[in-house]
Length: 265
Image (cartoon, rainbow, N blue to C red; front, side, top):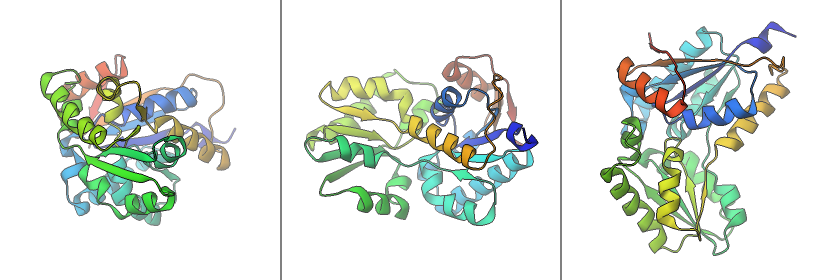
């Protein structure tokens, strides 16, 4: 086996939301080692200027490659929409991004009305507009910006009154427009999927794209012949630009493990 195969996969998000994608990748790729950066000192990306998001994405990608990453997963819809084209133009390393599950949602909708919950920055991006135009196929796409939700997940406030009120408002807006599918277009939102489903009811399907991204990472690693398939159990390392103790506490609860989080240099 080539030494490149045993190098880790780098993953980053504006905060802890990308852990929902990391969990899917851990299930799909049990032998891979992962490096995860929670850029919590700059969260949320959804209300930042594009220039700031690009700069953070570039800085973190450079750091992860410096730590030996053989591939980079941008586990953040906003950073993917804003920065992935530039990252790919600068770095030779395979870079995999997020994409709201518009295509599967349109394939499954019965009423031809699909709702998408995402950050403001994702929804106004050119990448998102092109995605919708490519797959809409006569369907109505109803978008719902969800300011405040990322911050609630970053605080590990998944079941509090404020979180429920925000979800009731945002999901309610989509239900009023007749959607039968809700796409979670932010990696933080799967941690709230149970509550979203509860509010939406059984007649509405909730779609997360973490599993699809994990499969795409496997495909890219196989195509580049850099998949670690030794059968060993992989490990994870964590960094953050936020308050280390706070972020470590939240990652331990979301990851359900006794992880150590280091300060991002």
